[in-house]
Amino acid sequence: MNMKFQDGLLFTSIQISFRGNTKVIENIVIDTGAAETIISPDAVEDIGIFAELEDSVNSFYGVGGSLHNFFSKNVVKVKLGEASLEEVKMDFGVIDPQGNINGLLGLDLLMELGAVIDLRKLSLTLDAYSEGDI
Image (cartoon, rainbow, N blue to C red):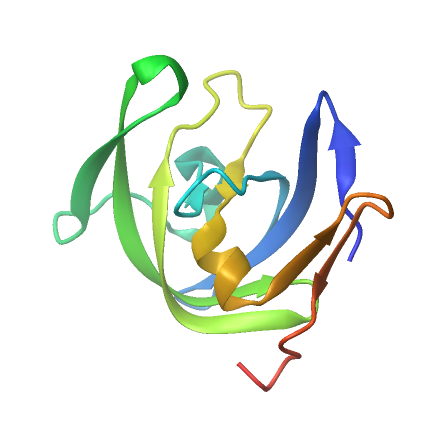
């Protein structure tokens, strides 16, 4: 699958399914420096993902030491290109207050999907899996 290099960052999209709703989320930064994937709540509110009483709420430190809160939910499916994972715990929190970045694709999903990033070709290959294998 292709990546887009813009403003010094690598972008892709992911698809999330939750409670019968599915959405492709654009402007996801591929971030090998992020331990976990995190998606902006604004990008998924329309498919019913928002903080509820039973969700766990945690904090992380961002670039420059700023403190950010996020909530976690289990989603039915996450699809990246042709590869997918089912019943995935995802984090949701504000990444970019301006709204230009809708999420960070972190090492948790990149490693689980066996991602290979080719910077010369600007492509992301998920060699280890194809749909149905996961």
